[in-house]
Length: 147
Ligand code: DQA
Image (cartoon, rainbow, N blue to C red):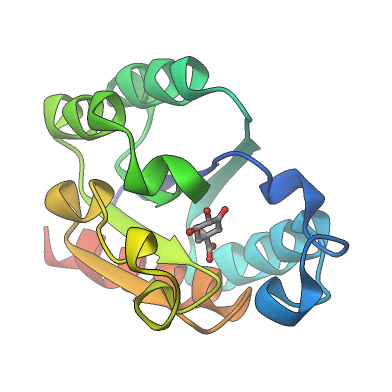
C-alpha cells in the first residue's frame, strides 16, 4: 500500500482554540495536527497537514496533489458551502476524498447543510470535533488498503 495522505484545512481553522469554542472545541489546529501525526505513524501513513485562508491556494494544493498524494482529507471550512471551484478541482484530481467537519453541520444553520465537497467525497465525518480527523485517517487507511 502506498499511503500518502494530505489533510487540507480551509479558512478560519487557524483560529481553533479561541474561535467559538462552544461550537468547535478547545483544541487548536496544532493540537489536532499533533494527534493526526501520531495516529498516522500508528496506521503507517505518510502525512502532510496544511491550512490556508485562501480559496485559490486550496484549489492549487488540490491540483498539485495528483503528483504526490494518494488520498485527500478535506475540511474546507466555509468554502465547503460556497466553492464550486474547489469541487471542480477535487473532481479533476481523481483522488479519494474524505470530508471532515468538527461540528455537526446538519444541526446548524440551513446554509451549512449543503456541501459542495460532499459531491466529490467518498464519505463525510462531522460532529466529533478534532477526533473526526483521526477517524478520517483510519478510514483513509482502509480505503487505501482496499485499492
Ligand atoms: C466547519 C463547518 C463550517 O460550516 C464552518 O464554516 C467552518 C468549520 C467545521 O469544521 O465544523 O469553518 O467546517
